[in-house]
Length: 581
View 1 (cartoon, rainbow, N blue to C red):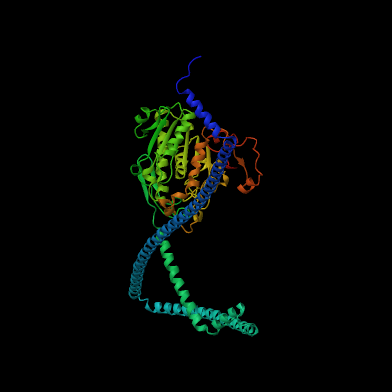
View 2 (view 1 turned 45 degrees about the vertical axis):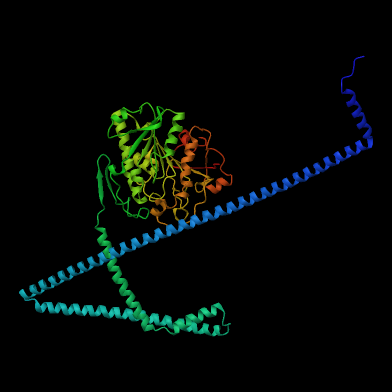
C-alpha cells in the first residue's frame, strides 16, 4: 500500500470535524436566510425600477410642458414681430403722407401764384382794351352812342339781377316754408315725447333736434348758404384753371440706343392703376446681363451679350438646342439660387441653352421705378432675340421665356417687341401697377404662341398683401389651391391703407411665401410628367365641392413645365384648378 502524503490525513480529519459541527438544521437556516436576503434585494430592485419609471414619466411631462411653453413663446414672438412691422409700416405711411402733404402744399402755392399772375395779366389786358375802346370812341365821336349802349346794358343787367333776386326770394320762401313745416312736425312730436320716459333714446334724439331748430336763425342760415356758394364758385374757378394748366403739360420721354424710346404718358402713368409717373432708367444703369448655363458648364455661368455677338459664338451656346430664359422679379437677382436650380433641373432632363437674365441693377429700387424699368429689360431681351435671329439664324420658335413676378411682365414686353416667341410662362405675375391695365402694359396671351400662368398669391394687395395678379392673362391660367393661400405658407397679415413702395421695400419680406411658391411648383414639375394635373372649373368653391374632376376631350393639362403638352389650347383663356400638398 502506498504511503499517504504528508498532511493529507490531517485535512480529512478537519473536514470531518466541521461536518460534525454543522448539522442539517443549521444548513437549512443558512439557505433560508440567503433566500430572504435575495428576496429583499429583489424588492429593493423593483422599488428602484418603479421609482425610475415615475421619474421618467415626470421627465416626459416636464418636456411636454416645456414644448407648450416654447410654442406659446414662439407665438408671442411672431405676434410682437407683426406688431413691430405694423408699427414700421405706419411710420413709413406717416412719412409718405407728410411728403405728399408738403408736395401738395407746394403745388397749391405754385398754382395760387400762377393764378394771381394770370389774373393780373387779364386785368392789364382788360384795362388796355378799355383804354383802346375809349380812345376809339373819342377819335370817332361815338361817345353819345356809347352812352346809349351803356344805358341799355345797365338796364339789361338790372333786369337780370331782378330775376335773380326773385329766384332767391322764391328759394328763401321755400326754405322758410320747409323750416316752418319741420318746426310744426317737431312740435307735434314734442307732445308725443312728453308722454315718453325721459331716458327713451328716440325721445332724447328728437329733443336735441328740436332744440337745434328752435335756436336756428333762418337769416343766418341763408347768409351761410350764400357764403358757401361763393366759396364753391371760387373753388370751381381754381380747379378749372388747374385742370387747364395741367392739360397743357406734356409727358416726358427718354430714348436709349438699341432699345428705343419710352414715355410716361397713358397708359404707363396717370391712371388709377398706375398713378405715379416714372421713366425707366438707362440701359447702362440697369446693366441687364445674360448668364448662360449648359451641360458643359453646369456649375458656373458664361456671360454673353447681344452687343458683342462674338461672346455668343465663343460660348457653349448652340443653335441646335432650344433656349429657355429665366427672368427674376423685384429686388431679386439673376444669380439667386432658384434661377440656377431651375437650369440644373432642366439640363438634367434635356440638352438646352438655359439663360438667367440678371437685371438687379434695375430691380433693387422703389417698386414704382422697378415696374417701369422692366420696359427696358424686356427690350434688351427682345434685342438679344433679334441678334440671335439676324446673326445666327436662330428662330424665336425655339425660345421659352420664364418670368417670376415683374419678370413675367418683362417676358411679355419682350414677346411684344419681338414676335414669334414659342412660349412664355408667368410665375405669379406681379399685381401692383399691372392688374386691369391695357394689354400693352402687362403680360397677355398675344405675347407668345403659348402663355401659361401659375397664380399663387392672388389675394388683394390691400389689405391682404397679395402680390400676384388674380386677372386671367394667359392661354392657360392655373390656380393651385384656389390661388390665394398655399399649403405650408403662413397666413398673410392684413394691413389696411398700405403704400405699394412700403410693401416692397423689404419691410414685410417674410410674407412673400405664397408669391414665391409659384417658383417651387414649376421647379418641382421639371422631370415629373405626372405631377400637377389640373381641371377646368368655374371657380374654386365649385372645385372644392367636387364638381370638376373630369377632363375635357383634349385631356387635363399639367401645371408647370409640361403645360405645353396640352392639346386643347385655343385663342381664348382657360382657367384650371388643382390641389397641391
